[in-house]
Length: 318
Image 1 (tube, one colour):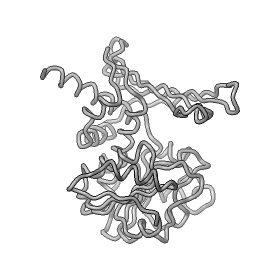
Image 2: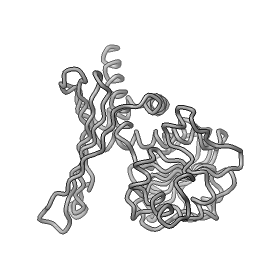
Image 3: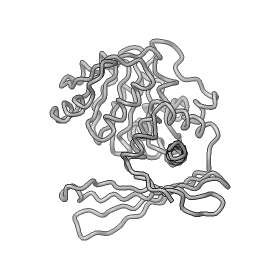
């Protein structure tokens, strides 16, 4: 049994390889039952949550993410969301690997966004805007620059010091990264806008989107949360990672559906359909596209399998 840390994942889960592994997994599919969610009473102000998210490839691999959400951890200077990923042998049930859950989730989430962008964003996109300064911000910069000819990157956050900190992590001649306090101006000038925030009120206004822009929404993972307004959804050709998940959990999809701004048929496709060629992505150069993700256990399984393969390969080379 192997233990794979977050630091080790960074060295083995290279984004080009991970994006292609996700593409293959969405094309072939896997067993994907609903996640199990349980409310846990605590002695604090808020209840906690326990989430068990399984997926498997029959006779090959079984993966289970065990995640907890303790909202009151903020007062203890601890992350509110914690997770561990278990990868089991599909023939015997024996434990093959124990993997850092938050790091695995962050890398597969960024890779899924760029997988979608490979169908939806203009291939010549050079200007990237990252909205949000959490764990995903740096991952998104790494993933997008690994795939697109990005030359200029702006980072925006409610706390400008945090945005400066994210930008300061990248000192490369290939692309320039800087922080901005002008969200509207940054959106208007971006080819790709990627958002990973916990906002409940829209930050991205549809009227700001330039022709040909691609909008990638990662936050807003409950029906009450939202990163973009109705006009953004109206103007864009809309795609999701999974239809069932996005239409049930994502406020950026649930709220426009409930209010009649869009109908179910206005969701042009999901990652299954895009990767299998059942639905086309961007139709023309000036089209605005939008991708909304909520995450899938399929992505965790694909990333975990690749991580173990790469660790084993590295060990054989020593």
